Length: 561
Ligand code: GLN
Image 1 (cartoon, rainbow, N blue to C red):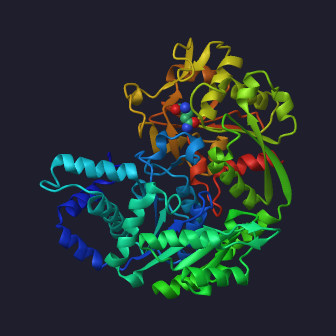
Image 2: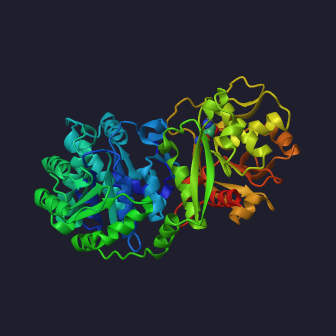
């Protein structure tokens, strides 16, 4: 496993850690003051466990250092090679880690930058155990799921706590209890109680409370999923009931009775107008004081600004219609991060964003016309993407935005396609294309990054993570960011071909941000247009409710005027 984003100082500490004897490590760890919260899910997947974890993190993180850890049962080392249809969009971190989308929730709710090492997958764990076995680390022993794999998991938990000097480590176990995939993570989480002491760990179980016959809440599925958890050896301390309405007193009593908890340890997680309301509800339900009481923590909450933004989301002054033009538009989770970034900008401007989903494969197939689908939108966004499908349709959309002075924001592939469209229709380079779309393109205005030309492995190989760009003086981008150097996160393999820079610039395309001594185009803009901006980066990854991404904010402002 290649280590990412570790400074040499960190690397040295890792070596020291590995050299320490097991007993010494444990002794060392017993002296840490970290508290632990383990969050599991029952009955169904997709109950919003990531949002629950992030909300708990939000409540605790005003004055405590909370470190979220996500355990995913799949065998992929990271989700970088997984199609967004499977688990939603991949989230990219400052250190270049490609991680589960839930990390987006953690960062956005808790206002922190997370790390690749905090996403444990079965792939990562098994790979390191097998690598160690090949090296001879276990010589003479049979290498087993328990204790070797569970020890590897626990070592990582504890190493994170120690390295980060965490007040609280929040461990979210993916999937649903009872799934074979997550058994080893659950077993490691069970064992943790003995290692860290029972007063230092809290188990929270999120479960579904379905409503039938016009609102009657049913607690049986929750009783059964808690039984599965108890069978694994974990007694939940807190049960969070996901339901349409708040839990009735009767439901709370039944859950308490059958699941071995007190009534005050049953917390409602009802439907909300926005996910950002969840921490507010948890606070009102007494979850923060319960955690403080059980873990002897002194977390205080300061949600004034947060509450103000939630109120603005709930009662917007204006509505703006934004077209999202892509090829996965029937699965909105594939664009969840962009939707959130738009919502953050909207909340800060008092605007509600209405999304119009444009499937660009239908445009290029001639099934729909651009002018029809875009006639009443206020702004057009072309997000990142991969491969050829849908790209001709996206370029038609970009052309429409450019020619009709409609605000346009292009992200990553969105920049590359905007450059191709400009090369074809303004510079007159008819054969312009990306070599990703046509390897024999006559005018390869977008081509593979030279550093990646000979790499065939797909996992973890794009240009990933935070990179800074130098911003052109007097450009719109400089005004938007108010800075001469801007760092955003990246995930791409291709770039604007330097051989075409002069031709593009001569015809009026402004390169408003570049990196690597001007070779790599990071931001482009068209000066006479109302708002025509694109970036090779993904500014959506750094957008937060309390700190919206500048490009999204200005794009929305332009779209609303
Ligand atoms: N496919 C393009 C590239 O690899 C764009 C990637 C993206 O949009 N994330 O460069």
